[in-house]
Image (tube, helix red, strand yellow):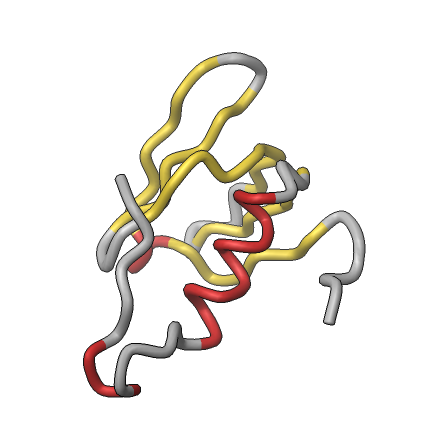
Length: 79
């Protein structure tokens, strides 16, 4: 999966894509809370408009964005 840009913002990534891209690039551990309350600790490998590909304990996990309630980074993003 590759990072997609939101066409509505004239080629600039939206806040969601910017956040995921920093987490992916820096190989940060993130905590995802899913809509059903499940919590996942993983690293972002890639994402597109509909899904996020995670590395969780060496295994790939594909999570659809509509199932994600929140994502918390393990450390503040660089500005």
